[in-house]
Length: 467
Ligand code: BYC
Image 1 (cartoon, rainbow, N blue to C red):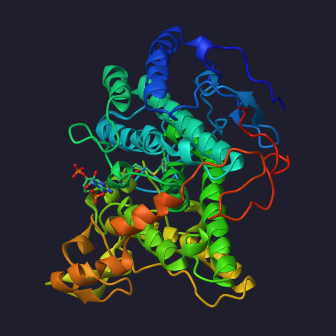
Image 2: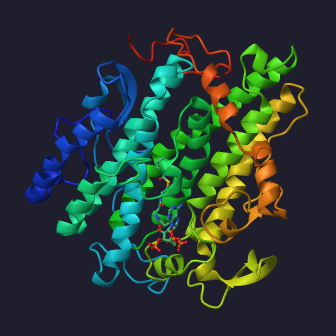
Image 3: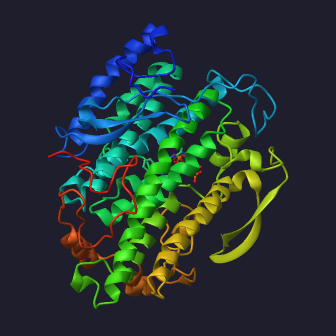
């Protein structure tokens, strides 16, 4: 076990020194990444000492090193889970055949698209969150924001390693373009919808890390099944870091919910500087549905092709007994002639929906924990996941309007009622008005309860970010 950061220019466990050409190519990309980080990373905090975790190996008992570091000096490294000898494809048309260690020619484009789509989300999220440091509710939260940011940077490195190593010239061009697109930019936006939405305050940040990072968990887990072995191994290690991001989101919202319930006992929540539960529910509705869109269309030939090819599997493929999925079906709601019907859809084309269904169950478990908090505070309001048909912008439900409980409505009803369900400008202005920075160790903003414990066994009063 080692928790010491190696002194190589790019820390790694892929023997970069043994491949001079690749090492040179990545060392040429590194300064472009640092320039991007300085321009688009956390605004105003680059020269500060932040108490951060750095990945230094993939060993379960000691992969992380904790210390103060200035973010531009963070040691972004390349870490893949170790190779399992004799690994075979776990699903699709090649199930049982040896996995690939190089990119098969016929699937090169499909694979590159998956890697680029995944890679694009990582810098996008850093860009979305770059101004949040100015309004952090505590030093603990400020540090968690930066932890998430630097690790999204490392996840970008993971995808760039794959592009440089396996996709030649095209891969190098794609790696450069990952640093050129910008979240929310009209001319060169990020690829997926949710990654172009502004994350303009901490309630949105916590909802993003709860719901959008959780999409990341499911997408990475299905790529971790890939028969392209280097992709599987890199995604497996990324999942280790992803767990903390979802913790930040889930516990962040839980603390806001707790504070709201406490304030409800003494009067109007907003008047006392809290975020009221109906407003929290609206932001939940927004970020949950934006994240549902990230799974793609309900019926998707792309998903079927990626599964057939052995490139993208299901969540925890080994829980299933059947891995070819020829002739099987998935029962799901679909739109037929403008009506919702429940139908059996050929399984391979339904795989985006299969994955989304797993994700929805996982989100519900998070809400159950928030609702336990409400119960514990003696509050009888409950947080609810809206229907998967509500407020969709991708897939078959995007063509019609639905209420949060899944009833189809016309556009006029939607126009009259959507403000009850989604945040409007007044909600946005109100939430922003609460966002005043608290930088004193151990102190919290009025709208959020303190965390249950600090980071890495340290107290909540620890100076996680030095002045
Ligand atoms: N926005 O067959 P379809 C994370 C496009 S998050 C815009 O329905 P398919 C993270 C699609 O590209 C995880 N466009 O779906 C979290 C296609 O275009 P073409 C990110 C969209 O192909 C927090 C067309 O619509 N990982 O890690 O199965 C912080 C029809 O597509 C969207 C991945 O996404 C959308 N939402 O796509 C940091 C994994 N959805 O081909 C990080 C890699 C679909 O017609 N990507 N389209 O031009 C994939 O597995 C798949 O590409 C998708 C589903 C999940 C996006």
